[in-house]
Image (cartoon, rainbow, N blue to C red; front, side, top):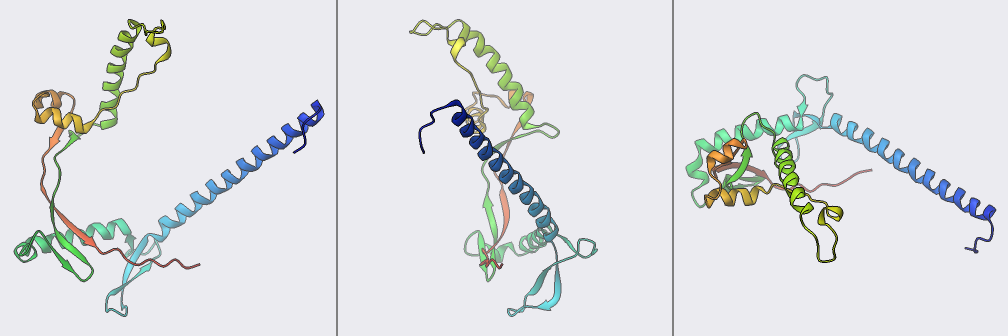
Length: 214
């Protein structure tokens, strides 16, 4: 590019920058519009049913259904129903499934149980985001008071140049509860609770080979 030597040329360069900015905005807006349309189309395609016809392996064929069809349901509804049926069957046959471990692999996936990790969760009716926000605001308010009292070695007051952010760590909170640094009654006042580890049922289908078509 040749050097700019006048205000007129500078204004032309600004016009080019403006054109670039406009083109970029149009492309991004078009992509966002296409993405929204694609997501909406995907929702409609995720309403499915299984036919009485069988594929080459003798399995029921899945097909994309008309959302108005009463027999058709969203993928998530099918997944929940199939998983519930598998759980009921597996609990009735747990001795066979766990004969050589905690799971049994079949042709198309695995049935079994795994021990979940102990964790922190909210009590019924509470929202974690609200709890975290309340704690964060309380801590930041106290820290800002302390920062105003702190002068750095360079002579600048810390509150003039430092922003404070605080994140509630579920991992550290659980450690504090287990070490009894935080009592469960205190945890309850925060509207939080400890979720104990448990034997959780799993129905894990094998990952299918997905081939995209034009």
